[in-house]
Image 1 (spheres, rainbow, N blue to C red):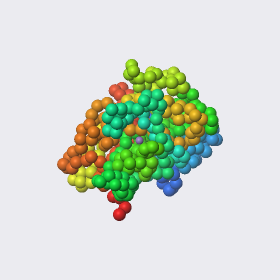
Image 2 (tube, rainbow, N blue to C red):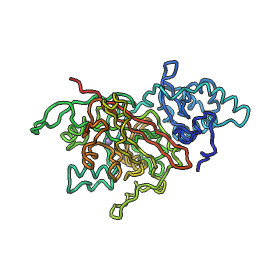
Image 3 (tube, protein in one colour):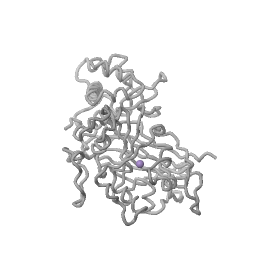
Image 4 (cartoon, helix red, strand yellow):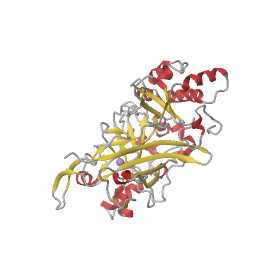
Length: 434
Ligand code: MN
């Protein structure tokens, strides 16, 4: 499917199979350029190619005026609006620009582009898009079952779970970029004598998820058939849906998550296109014999390639560990292919009633958990299966303490294929306001 093994870039670090930013990937980002403005870029090797500067210096000549204008924008929304044909045309052009030159003209272009590279290290990234709406799904049956068993031991998975890709409308205004500290929220929760009080949460948690940005959307009232759904996905990022479990358990009935989750959601700076993950597609989720078949509108014609083999790692580092110079502790590992519902099914279901998605909207999978201990995507599940976490300092964690840093990273890797990094989504907990 891909000529990745033969494709080499003149950006030498990109050719190291372990690098994570090979010529095949070219993830999008928005970063603060030397002139102080936000510029669109793509990751290659250890660098960012500045697309605004490329457009300004004629290196993107030959592309449509719409694409050139989108490359000069300060956010990715105009590019998202142009749809998958536009993104693919731009990626094809960038791939040729960044590939090892095979003639004198290409050599000249490569030399000019080399001066438009910025180092990834110490880059100041900014939110890649204006996010109009944010929706969080609940696509991991392992997560749903484990959390459900805490609240309803007799009936952990509700009957609708296996026929509806469940989700809720989240809050876009509090989505922040990786590295932004997260203030411990105050909220209404039950105190020790079950009397409600308003106080800082005592049960702050993370949720390891993959976010996916919508490109071209759909008109209000016009659903997207499942076979077209992936054409609308601009790319994937890593996402942390910070959650206050004590606030959540008090407020969630009957309308679902509200202030327990909308105080912050963190995302990684890179958006990796689905095309970059073409070599990591795997079969969609296997349904158990007693699972109902998906209803027709959710029945995918490409189930054999609807999954993505994408590995997630969560690490934790307490303030004490940082002071002692200790490395972050890996606390869990998950995989995107363990979900019950696919990205395609989530997009199709979301718009099946005619709800319109718009360029820059962000959807997320929900907590990605696997079946085994060690694959829990949040602390709530972890303490149910493994008890409190012991850190190398001897500290114990049931939930997050002030000063804790959570970092979630995702990567696709397989022998013989260059590694594709989605990067890291990190955040440190600040104390609640007094
Ligand atoms: Mn979530």
